[in-house]
Length: 385
Image (cartoon, rainbow, N blue to C red; front, side, top):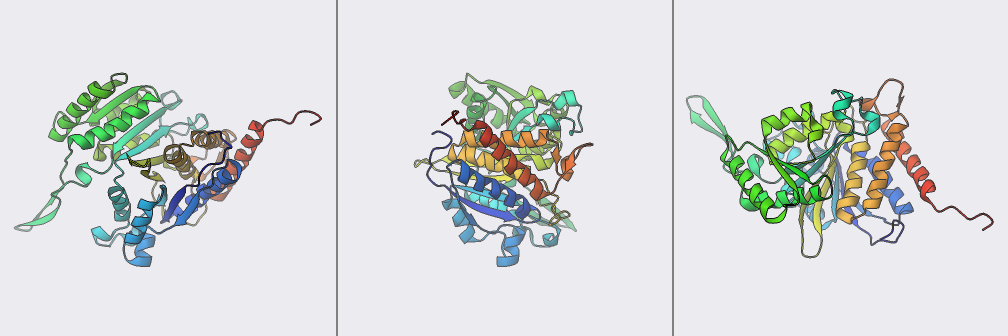
């Protein structure tokens, strides 16, 4: 389909959440409106509550009705959840449980977290310029299994004033294969290299992970280079020589830690998007949730200083993976790079000599650059026409 062709409408459930979530999601919605008006693809948004906002309104971090809306939508765009005002709630009632339920009930088993360093931000990282310049890696994290969901789990009284906390790390062949396929498929469109990360030296679940990834590779993906690395070594290599990686595939716990570490290579959590994907169904639909990887940052909520670029880039991933609108996604990503090259910065990525702007002004800068990119690519009128 050409970039300007009329496309069937898509439906998106918008869950701004808590803290800075509503502020950054609002700027992504403005970009969505621009895409609808200028690229022939207008999405229909429905708003809902999740996290602390849902706790305040309904007494639960996610209602059954909102959960059903998420399942019915073509995609979900989420801001952030949580904050200290809900710290004293029972564990099962905390805002974060709403996000975990979305992931579990939608079976969003593959979390995609790119760590890309825009040229204009190569000096914003705490690492040396030459270490991170040109960095473009993708971490594929298994999201619905492992120690976060395994049973048995809980805290029990074992007598004599002692308690025991238990979480179970567990994976099956099917769980490993399906996230492995996502990683290998994406690698085929990138550098054709996958590094599988686990702790096969000390964990039976890690040994199973390695053995099953090897089987999957041999059976279906021999055209992709496969390597293996222990999680602790991978953590070290990410700060030593991150550009050695193309696609990293790993389990839920290690993926949580390693993707946050990789995010700081780029200079700010405010720059990084993510996508959580389910399996493609027989009707072609795929459950999917898109969100920035930063938290709710309640200390700056309402001050207009949050960086909306991670959420805008999450919307670009939404277009790419849920609606096959790669040209539109490329346009947004190219636009963000151009805005950064022009020296526009929110507080988290401010550098000497650059222009400090608010959350809304960063959104305005993106929209202005989208307009400029559109004019640049439009066919020129023939003289005298």
